[in-house]
Amino acid sequence: MDPTLDSKLASEPVETKRRKKRARSSSPPSSPCALVSYKELPEYMKDNEFILNYYRANWPLKDAFFSIFRWHNETLNVWTHLLGFVLFLGLTMTNLIEVPQVSDLIAFFTRSFPMSGDINVSHDSQDLFMRTTTTTTNLVDLKPESAVTPVTRWPFYVFLAGSMFCLMSSTVCHLFSCHSHHLNLSLLRLDYAGITTMIITSFFPPIYYIFQCDPLWHFVYLGGITVLGLFTIVTLLTPALSTKKFRGFRALLFSSMALFGIIPGIHATIVNWSNPRRNVTLTYELAMALFYLTGTLFYVSRIPERFKPGWFDLAGHSHQIFHVLVVMGALAHYGASLVFLDWRDSHRC
Image (cartoon, rainbow, N blue to C red; front, side):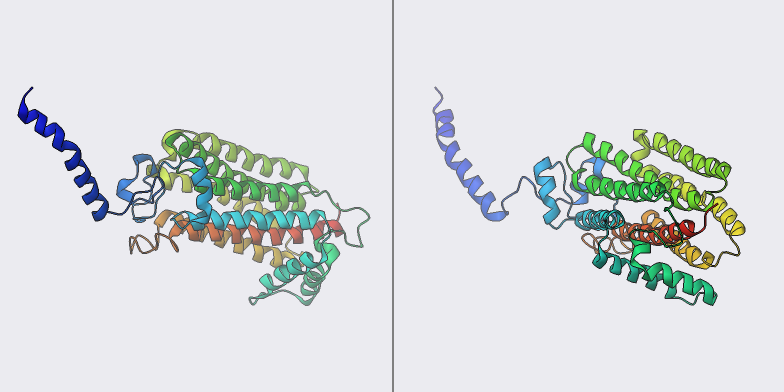
């Protein structure tokens, strides 16, 4: 055997140990679930180039689940909608089961929000609204004395269920989409379906209760938004449309569904022009539209992180702002739905 080769084989373990020792001393130990930068991400996870660090990539499901308690650039995306889900679950249970302490909190919210601005409402409408928002039974049981039996509640609970589905699907998507390419794509579709479902179900309380005495408009408006929503879901099931290239297109689809509400909104305002609660419900619904529109603008423009890449990686970036505004918009619509319910209980066809 070649003596030179023998010496190389004999010295190889020593040199290997030295190289490993130098590597350990010059760099920190690596973690199987370390956070990575945008440049290190697999291509399917590259969505926002202005968020530079703190990404999770190809994590096991168990680690992805427990990352809910770690700081990364999805932490607040997860928690904003998880807490929103818990809030709407509580509101749903409050309306199903009488809980006086919780109803007092809801009364405070519904009383303070529309009266915070200078709204041109008559004294009669103010009295009606204060009676609506300060009476526990009207908010929780929603059974005013003037009605023998309350109006059906299923459109109201359809809205609450749609909101909870949207918030939970968003939470699951942001928590587990770091696992694999296949799961990432599936969860994005679930997220888009949740957004669409929330938009569709938001139409049910106002359209059902306002046009309860005219079933034709029930069919036209609720049927129209449902068909438009199903078209949106089917369209977004196309894998290519889940990529960042079609971010603006997705926002356009969701916005078109929301803008569909202008037509029944104008119709409802005209037929209820003399209704003393008109200004109250309009205030709620305009607030909802403002929250959703502003959130969409943040979602599309990626402000503020586009002006200071890396500064808003953990907190304050556009998607987190979008999440908060979605919850606020849903709460505004919830307040309007309570007013619709109380009004329809006391004004039958």
